[in-house]
Length: 263
Image (cartoon, rainbow, N blue to C red; front, side, top):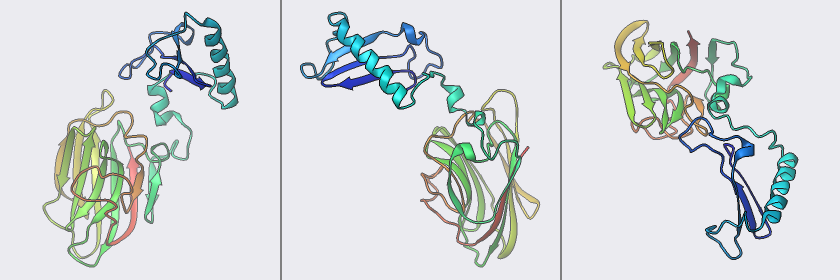
């Protein structure tokens, strides 16, 4: 895990912490330079006494067993890259090379690597809806959740775009007026400042091509919204990006289509 290695066998544990603390991006050691430790947990359950120097033969046995098991379960080659492996842009998928995405029905559970990548760029989201009452509400489209993400939704008929920056800053851009009964087109247009990853930008809300409000999002997520949250249309299947609603908060009107454009 992240270059750290360990194996258990018949009461013995051998482990090597790779030379990178959790908040550091690059390891200070190569795999060959890592320090291996050895513990007999039948007598030392808390792993307080390192026996690597006292019993080098046992350590070598477990190191060889680790390589055998690593080959068997396709752990090899060892790879301690961090940001590169978390960056979903490096993975081939159906979104590669595409800048326009249209969703016609409620969909859920799309992994971040298979969803449109709005990070570090300008984008727009356009939702065509048909509502029968003034209190129509629910999620139009969302990605991520409580610890990082965004959500485009209606609350009491009013369009809202919420951006959650790493559970520390939340920006709410909300229309003061609700959409009318019947068909409407709701759009959120984001203009990215550019520069370093995670820069801010300006977001505008439009109803039927008329701007109703705008706001600044000072900081954006530059690399990853999360490992277990997904991209959802018409509902929110994970944790909410804001506490304004409780999931799944499915859209109560007729969501005819959602178009996401990358610029």
